[in-house]
Length: 83
Image (cartoon, rainbow, N blue to C red):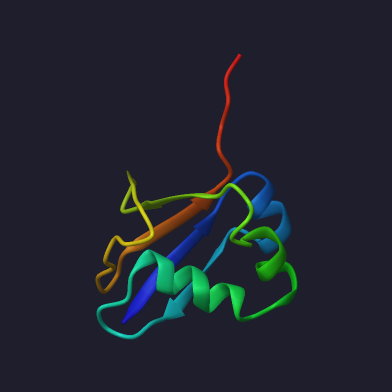
């Protein structure tokens, strides 16, 4: 299945605006992140498990256990603080 990835803020600066990725049916946000980490390089650096990264699926905040569906839009972004 294909999902559309979007990166925001510092992740966008490191990885670009986004991309389309093919995943196995039944994949989760966590499986998607693992696939991106396996690429190594900048993906592994900015999406590393020890880094605070938030995710939204179809504009709803999501956990790594959240399932993905064909055509889903997945956004990765750093936590935001106001002030």
